[in-house]
Length: 534
Image (tube, rainbow, N blue to C red):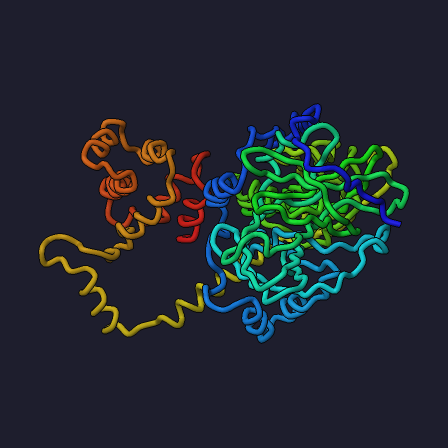
């Protein structure tokens, strides 16, 4: 029998709680990350919009990968025609099986940051099929998803695991938020049980959604466990703890009161097991004889998985995800990573906690010999092995880069032109009859102003530091700012000034990358633009 939840009582304000979430204990051992609680968050849907406009703007998934026309059923029909068997298998799951997409590289698609497949031997009896109708969402900008629900019924998103109960047709948009923004609202013994979402209806009132079921990561194998599920609802300028109406081994059900950031939380007087994930990333571009891996522990929550992927993208060095079976059982406590053959692993022990932290702790494993490497995760108190994987030579190749190169070569072959055609285009784009090169690159291959504008648009407030790295002086920057008020044009003129100081043939994107690659604060987006020129 699944642990029953406390459903009585009206929504209670979280301010009544006592105590804050502790921070990660091993922060002194981390190479690139410090664990810390985030600042007090804002509230209501305005807060979530602000987060989408800030945090999610930095993500590489901020692009529309589906056309704006057509509903989710049409998307499904198109996808079913794809040759990729893996994709076809994933798009027609029985939603009660909780089969969601996961992949090796978080940059490839939004789905790879979502909830991973749960295969828990301890509590699988509690994860009962609900016979929900699967819907495949369209992906919009800034990490948002959208589904069209065609009538009264219960529908489950094939990507996030959200379940919507509707009374009539409605279009729903939703996005995954980070718990770190709302950590100050989780007080006392309450802990997050699954991802937090911002949900909204596009063409109808919120009352059209009767209920929402949120996926959770708590293992309910112990039938006698005393556990209470509720939801944290950011509403009317403040956080509320609202009652839920039911829960299963995979979901927490909540009757919709209004739509704004909402996520499941739980309270238990006993130690709790969680459906967890172990995420392995390899550093790209290291010495061919050296192998560096980062290994993260997290609950199986798309909010946490997304946070880790974003943290990895923010590092100076590029890392890619290694596709190994990630799911395991994790309890709050201390874990040790072991390897065969023995490598240099730090820290020696890592504490797994459900505390909300802005930066996630990880193991760093360093090997001076080639693979295979067998990694095993050990719980230090019981010495039980909770996860193991073997990393082979083929796993250490960034497959996304290989695919990108193939696409690039294909485009080059398809765009081959005769010398006459090239000459016509060169004459059109490089008309110098008035003494000014109007557009395009010159014959030396130097970067064009159009290309520099792309770089300028990706630069933030660190653009002046970029200028110093490029050898420009403070007085030159002052002159640019006096002559031009538009910030983007200031950045462009700075880059053009750099170009003009170079000799012909030494002002390419590759040369710009060589001058900036050692800069610590260079935005990821700029790195990608410049690295793509190599």
